[in-house]
Image 1: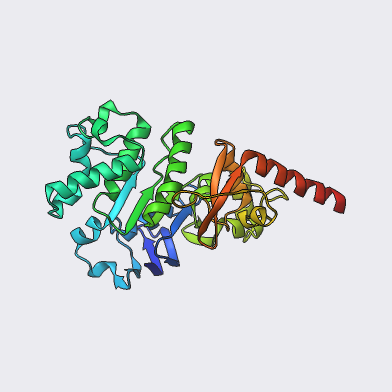
Image 2 (image 1 turned 45 degrees about the vertical axis):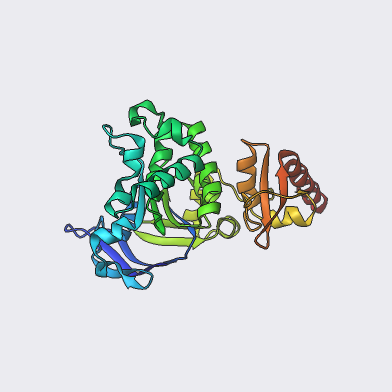
Length: 324
């Protein structure tokens, strides 16, 4: 879907914001860029929709150079969610969401139906919210509208630049959970920038860790936990309170299912977590809710509760103690 080929961004003073990056982001993947301030993660994101021009190299979308796309066509087909939500204050929520569909000349009934569907999908009752102004909404509600606006014209790609970092911890955690559920439904290609390692571990199918404009490691959350590429990655994990130890990095959801630590029952819709997700990510989620649904081989197979994960981890500790 998105391919970076030796992409560099160099400023006039000679400084490299991004240096010789090669990446492939897959269709339907939740791909996370993370790294310290100034590492190039936001610059890399903004080059995808040409908000920042690259210096050398090429970015392809569906094997077509981004420079070959009409700039308006490119941006209309890429949703964009910012930390600063940037809703138009004088417009209603419905008018804010309708901007790109109207530019693409959708008919009014289709726009109305799309707005209803999307607002309901993020837990905002459409009839209660469509005629309100942004100032009447909380920060978390405004950010939900920002996500909906990015999805309004049904783009295949969504760019999200630290979208939850300005929110209070409770609102942020709720939106993270909502994004997991929403992505299961919409299956868009999402490119997400964050400085929060726990957020990256929770959301990302793959995580790209950057330093000084270069990719240090790009892999699944579980693989990064098990095999950090170097001391920088290990320190970054530890600084985000994501530690490599017996209770997390060695195990994934599949291990819990194999050992019977779940309730096998019918799950409506798609599951919250795939079998390849690290148990540490599941533990983070179950610290704030009592139950999650899980899938195996692409099918929802049942539920894992707080009690299940406590019993599973206690069992692993006991086994580890026997080996000492």
